[in-house]
Length: 315
Image 1 (cartoon, rainbow, N blue to C red):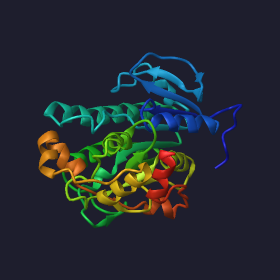
Image 2 (image 1 turned 60 degrees about the vertical axis):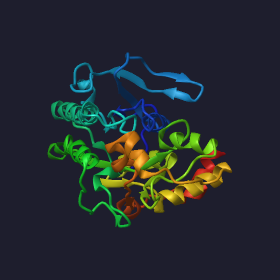
Image 3 (image 1 turned 90 degrees about the horizontal axis):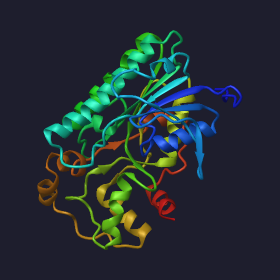
């Protein structure tokens, strides 16, 4: 696809653009010549800059309607939906589970409605999701053709994806990002794992056999832009590295990158006592999701191996 002109940039609207993945994605899009608008629960503010470079425009939205921003979808090149309450921020009480699900479904429905009302439809809609779609797959490798699993995370992914699928009926190319654990600096799951290793008490969770579907932040952002720009991309794509590792392998690699030992395992019973249902679905279960369709489309990973990726992130 031809690169957008900086004199007449293509417009991309991003929900969740203030998040761990959204921020570097917006910077990458702006560096590529796109005009980026972030939908935010905070105050609106115009294009600006900070020491790391240009910042996108921020437009206030309520997370469940097109009020105040829906007109921006008319003539936009792309919409990217990454909005949703954090999954791993605490125990899954009934109220929290409802917020996790509804924050995603309502955001998707609002963006779908904006597309439906647009006189000039966007070219592409990028929809967030996760490898939780597949459930606990044990040692079995899965790809985008594999069926959904079961459990709360699977239900969330199914409803999240379904919230915007109807854009296809409006003639808009629809791409789903089934993301693994994104490894980057300053946040995300990797940040949570560093403290116990710094204190020499890091170790695997439970038996440590569960698969860890990971991807380096740089590759995650590059893959999203790649799918946004590639006219042949449509449907679900696993955003995971091509190397499958177990939780135990991950801990060993992280320990080596930090010059720390991979110590004793955290007992499954202790995790269940502390985290409840979250422990079984997010910490003790696993998935070995392979990025088959992304590789077939010609995407080239810069960080395909975990050992090297962690060394780079720890440098």
